[in-house]
Length: 216
Image 1 (spheres, rainbow, N blue to C red):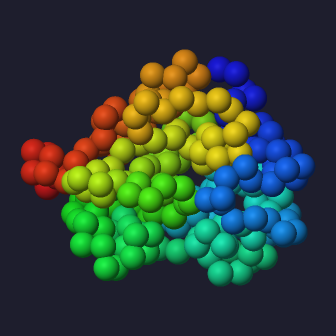
Image 2: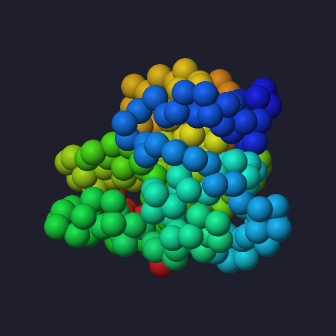
């Protein structure tokens, strides 16, 4: 494993890019002035379920707490309190309650019952951090939801670290499909962990495929 391509080390590269040039995409809100979290705040901050922060998130928040407040994770960038929305409520927040397809994501919650935190990017497709089970590096998966045809959910990134790096264009990732990183030489192992942990498999699941699963 190339440590510069994972976790806090990768986020350090993202921070350097954002400090110097900002985000290279209009999807991401600008950071007018970073609001770093105080060390004592970081030390006591926990994910829902009293779990520690993944390395990527801890490193990012040491740089800035305002961007994720703008994205919709919490209200106070200096004293974050994470939300507790599930996949259905998060999808409605991202797509709008008027999108009839968004309501179908609540049916995925038997498979994916953990808290979700929204991220930027996409139109018919959206991204979110899923706080289910971490991988062997301590990172949680970034899922993609899609409403273009049928409601669809898949693991798109193996963690916030790789998502941020792609958003900042500090890594060169080719996406022929949402799940292309399942075959990436650096990220395939982590993607496989999340595919198993979430029950989504390597290719993700469409709404109608939930009927085939034994979720009781």
